[in-house]
Amino acid sequence: MNIVAIAIADFVGLMLLIAMLFSSHIRRATNYEEFRLFTLIAFLSAVACVVDFWMFFCDGREGIICRLVNLFGNTYCFIANPVFAIAWCQYTDYKLYHSKSRLRRIYRIAAIPGFIMALSTIINLFYPVVFFIDDNNVYHRLPFSYMFYLVEAGYLIYSIYVIKKYEERYDKVRFFPLPLMLGPIAAGCLLQVLFYGVSLMWVSISIGLTSIYMSMQNEFSYLDTLTGLYNRTYLDYLFEIYSKDPKASLGGVMIDVDYFKEINDTYGHSVGDEALIDVARIIRLGKTDKAIPIRFAGDEFILLMKGSNDESMKKLIQGLRDELKLFNETEGRQYKLSLSMGYTIFDPDRDTIDTFFKKMDDNMYSEKVKKHSERV
Image (cartoon, rainbow, N blue to C red; front, side, top):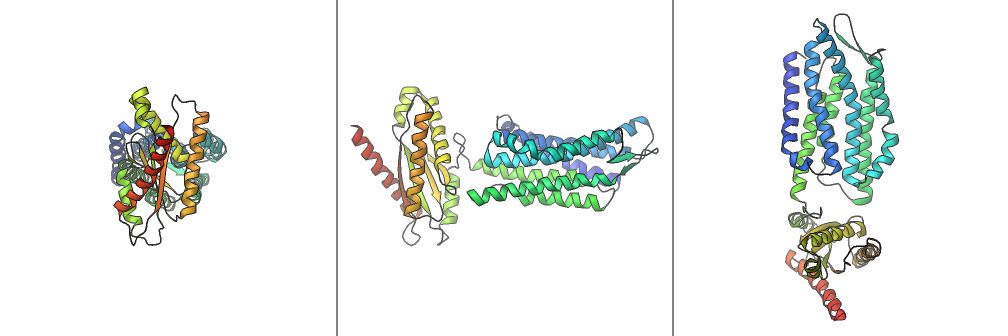
C-alpha cells in the first residue's frame, strides 16, 4: 500500500470523524455518559488517523525525528487499539443499561486484558515484544502483535454478547446497527493482519462510527427531549408496523397524570417538568420487559406491547401501580403522583388507529372520573 493510498484512507477517516464531532457538539455538551464514551472513541480514532499517516511517511526515512515519529506513533496506535475496544464495550453496555455502577462492576475485571496489552506496548519501548524499528528506521511487526487483534476481536465479540443478552430479556435493540459498525472494523482488521503494510483499520473504524452516529441521529428524532421516552412520531411508526401483523396481538395502555395542573399551579412549571420525568422513570421501571414506553402528549403516556392478552395487560398495569406506590413512599417529593390507566387490545379486523386510541382513552378516563368523584 503506497503512501498516497494511505494518505487518502487516513484523510477520509479523519474528515468523517471531524464532521461527526463538529455536528455532535451540542449533544456532547450534555452530561450523558454515552456521549462522553462515544466522543472518546471518536477522538482516539481521529488522532490515530493523523498518526497513522505520519508513521508510514517516516518509515524508512533517515533522521532522529522520523525515528521518534515511527516509534511513538506505532506505540500510540497499539495502545489506542485496546482502549478503543474497551471504550466501545462500555459505550454499548451503558447505551443499553444506563448504569454507571454496572460499568464499574463489570469492567473492573473485563478491562484487564486490554490493560495488559497497553502495558506491553509501554514495555516495548525498552524491550521489543510487539514491534521494533531497525537501524534503517523500518518498522517490523513481532509475533506478539497479533495478540492485539485477538484481544480487540474478543472485546467486539463481547459487545455482541452484551446486546444479545439484553435482547433475550428486553426485546430487540432499536437504532443500534451493530453489523454496520463491526462489519467495516472486522474487514479492516482482517486485511491488515493478512497483508503486511496495509493500513485500513482506522478508516474502517471511522466508517463504523459514522454509521452508529447516523443511527443515533435517527434515534434522537424519535425521542421526547424532556422524558427520554419515545415520542408521538415513533408511536405512529410502530403502530404502522404492528397493525400489519395479524399475529402481533398488540396491546396498549393509556396513562394520564392525575391533578397535574395542580402540581403546575402550586409549584411551578419546572416542578411540573420534574414530575413528568418522574412519571417516565416510573413507567420504565414498572413496565414489563417488552412494553415500549411513549410520551403521547403533555401529561399523557402510552405503553405498546406485542403478544398481549387481558392477563398480561393487567399484570403490566399492576407493575406500574406497584412502582408508583414505591416512588411515593420513598422519594420524598413535595408532590404525590397519581396515575389513571386504561388498556385495550387491538383488533385488526375491527379497529383503526383512531378507535384503538379512543378505547384506551375511554377506559383511562373512566378511572380518572372515578378518582375525581371519590376525592370530592
